[in-house]
Image (tube, rainbow, N blue to C red; front, side):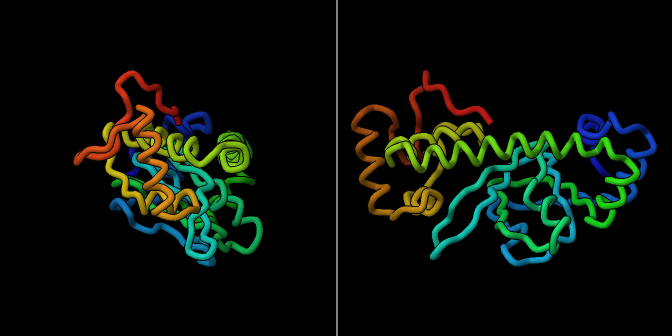
Length: 216
């Protein structure tokens, strides 16, 4: 059974008939942290909507990740949705950052709804605006910010997503997500720790209590 509050918050404007169809056709699944949801080149059978949790969407280049954006509670994956208008093939990887609950809607049903309920496009236009902003932020970060700023922004972002401060992040994980090496990240972390922007303990990487994290 689909989470009724989630459905009404996101799709209530489409009316009771649509909500009935959604409950009939959607599937809800629990996904454990670090589980791959979809991979590049895989055929998309469903459009995912995140009821709770966090999902990282990225591509790989020579084994290094380039993060496009994070799907957060109440969001959907725009790149999965866009693929249903072409060849249904995923151009990204999506991995659960934490234990997550996901609603899956068959792409064939989405096609039918776009005709029968054209106002559903409002959902995807909203997602497009958010994802475009995320990608632009990623590009600006990569082009204009030094690596120490990018590492610090990444830590802030992860703390904002998970609500955990300190947060468990390995140097290798940060390096993979930012497209650099573990050794470089270790040097950068030591530098920003010496500058007082973070502290590294057994519990993880911690921001000062008065630090404003990036809100998603």
